[in-house]
Image 1 (cartoon, rainbow, N blue to C red):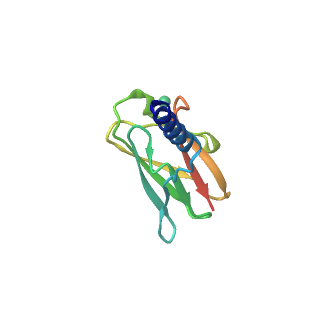
Image 2 (spheres, rainbow, N blue to C red):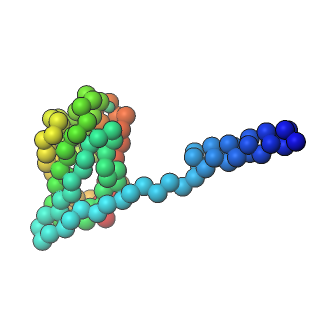
Amino acid sequence: MAKILVLVIGLIIIGFIVWWFFGKHEVAEVSADVGDDLQSIDVEVNGGYSPETVVLKKGIPAVLNFTRKDQSSCLDRVVFSDFGVNQALPVNEKEAIKIDTSKAGEYQWACGMDMFHGKLIIK
Ligand SMILES: [Cu+2]
């Protein structure tokens, strides 16, 4: 009886691990607010980026407003290597980052050490 119990618990744990690592976790994808000639979105920086995936419309100038709430120096810069952006993010200050949306595609942004990541989808 005890063996069966151990087996069942083991299978539950294995199932959980498989789900955790290989299960499809939905990542929140948020579109920027689109106006006539500008689109913008607020990104909160607090132990990572929220939202983590930002969708922009191609051809409309875009601004990402980053506000860092996190004290850790890890997140004190944000880097968009594809756009040549490496911007300091002072705590609790809104930093506007302009993005060139002329080319569709998927781009990454990251903290200064390339540890935290966000994704930009231009379409
Ligand atoms: Cu970092």
